[in-house]
Length: 175
Image (cartoon, helix red, strand yellow):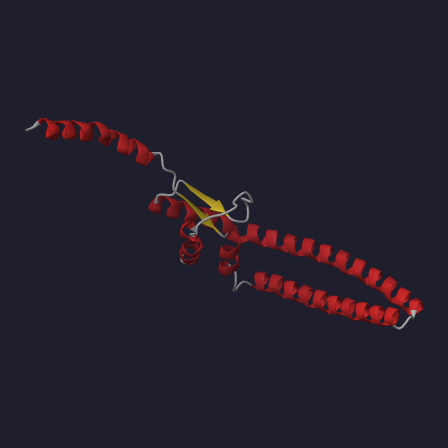
């Protein structure tokens, strides 16, 4: 064997253990949209249908109140353009009153909807099933870490290739 071949063989033998060390230090991670998993998992549940119904009802009321405010605002503008400052002031006062009501209503309903959603998420052992499925996927696919898009608000960017939400939805449905 000539010197170059011996040197190359020794160099390869020396570097081979380093390659395995470097390959072991790479952390493989994934992200999952737990909110989407939850809504898919419970889409046929009466409790979720009730939540979605309340959410739709709330949105319908907010839309109607917003349209009402827009109409009042247009009346106020028309009154100002016509030089009717008394009616313009009345419209403005009514707008302020209705806008304050809408803000308070929205805040109250959002708190109510969040409370219902949190109760739903904690019921029926959903998270126990979710964590079991996530553990199975992590072990079978070699993930060191799986992050939730909702609960890890420090995720600023991620590649869609690390999103395992669809895989979790399929597996939890058959769990």
